[in-house]
Image 1: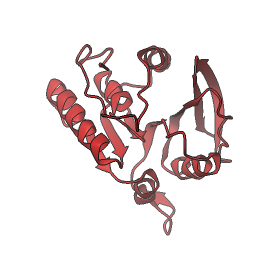
Image 2: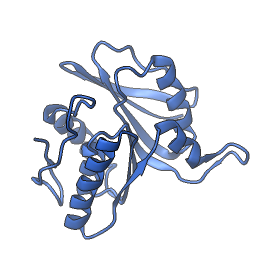
Image 3: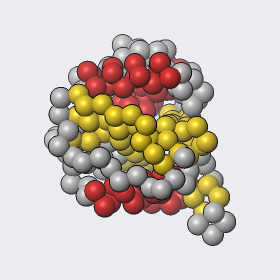
Length: 194
């Protein structure tokens, strides 16, 4: 069973998505990721977008550690239900409506945040977390990263979690990788806007 590791809601258990359609981030990877984010001091007050959210555990962890707004994006009905339950739990502990769930495809949600006609985003985010499903091709991931690049705050951080066997993502021209780390079968890439 997954849990919130630290922060205001630390120790609370999280519901998991039934079945094997999602692969939760292991506690080891989650602890390493959040240790790094804490050391960079970027969580407090952050606006966070958790794409392909699954159970929402990564986004919910950011809320527990001080993010001011977290959006979990998921399209699978079972996962959406679990995200809503987990969001409700952390919001109750925080006594605030910090975490919301948006049902839909990642691309449709990203398209909704960016007005292609005016070239202005309707929302920007400080942290974007992506743990895309394995069947997502590298080309599809590159297109998603291109859309993400249009809604990033100036000092934003993008974290991509993939299989250790996956190649480095193809970054859009407006983003650059600044760090990466492999944890067993999981590889994390960190990027920022240029």
